[in-house]
Amino acid sequence: MIRACVIGWPIRQSRSPLIHGYWIKRHGLSGSYDKLEVAPDGLQAFVSRIGPDFAGCNVTVPHKEEVMEWLDGVDDTARAIGAVNTIWHEDGRRFGTNTDITGFLANLDQLAPGWDAAPLNAIVLGAGGAARAVVYGLTQRRAAKIAIVNRSLDRAEELARTFGANASAHTYAELPELFGDATLVVNATSLGMIGKPGLDITLDGLNPAAVVNDLVYVPLKTKLLEDAERRGNRTVDGLGMLLHQAVPAFARWFGVTPEVTPELRALIEADIKSGA
Image (cartoon, rainbow, N blue to C red; front, side):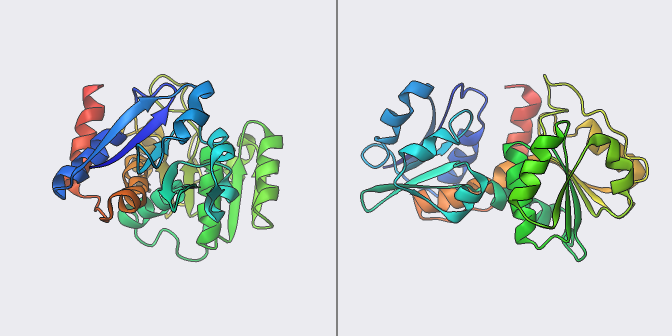
């Protein structure tokens, strides 16, 4: 039986077992996928179990950066983002990648076809780990402009320098000037998530053709998405990113490439709405 899991500290909030368990059952596989709480001081010991005990694992907070130290190698994507969310075992060695970019891009491709048509002028709210993955993904789609907006301008400037001349750093006060020619707005912060402060912005002046994407998926429809819908902008929630980022990991461990189906989405939506 093929075993995989997700690790974090804490881990009770993870919905990855629901996603992977659905695919294991759908494809009639002999496998399991569990969630395991791994304390920071137990991370190295857990990594040594990948191979003997597990085909691989997903990694969530707070281990995405630190786990890189204990792997035999990481691919270019994980190196560019500076974080690993998927580990696998191969020829006696342990490797890491980051599939958040895959999830981010596939979600937009599915729910907002044509979102990356030239010229792609993007606004990314935030400058943390999620924003880093989003900016990297946008560079892969050859974005003409990527405006990184953050409360701390220093962090936005650091991220912009990492990803080249097409990226620039801005404060929230500059949003009205940026909205006019934007074709994509992405909230890559946790603001607007249940239990977090709200995202205190208005979309006045936003290009009517712009797509608004919120990576937050609890709640499924954030205030940002509600505001964008009222204005007539196309919207994309964050749940699809969670679902699509799981596809390449499952394929690597179980040897089957699964699909993100309406049935799977409905399963996870029901779990979110139940407050489980």
